[in-house]
Length: 222
Image (cartoon, rainbow, N blue to C red; front, side):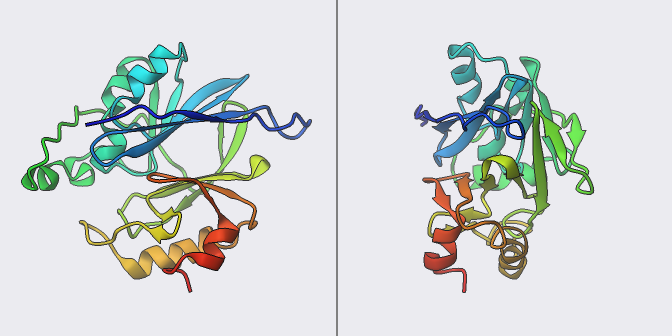
């Protein structure tokens, strides 16, 4: 089952070098997956597409221009096809495949998962920063939880969308197809733990945290 749970982070103070931005959180699906709506005067985009987020954005009267996928496990892409049908472009590290969504495996666990097929409109170019809705987004490829995991860092706003790489007090599971604990820990150390300690971490599941908090308290990070 799923639930709606939205909360808005206040818009950052206006500065010539930092556009106004608002982030709202949606949580839904069998495993309570977070999706994030980023709104700016120059456009709106989502980070991930959990079950029910398309209807949630429609109910708010928000047009979604783009969807950035942290990875394509089923719970992060359940509404991808619906959002695409509404006009949003899908961005990801890899093209769509049922190997990435894990649908067959999860249905084998007895979970009635259905992911409508979709297409990825834009494959990330990791050699370049992403410009979207007037924001500059730094991409980092961090496999280990999945083979296509990417994080999105809004440097000017001190926010990183970590997907299922890093959680408050935990890290992503590595016992699924393509998983690797050493890869994941190395990627977190290289790309996330060197961010400023006050950087807000918005993960794919659970509450927000700070890089500094995880550096001090996360038992998986030595």
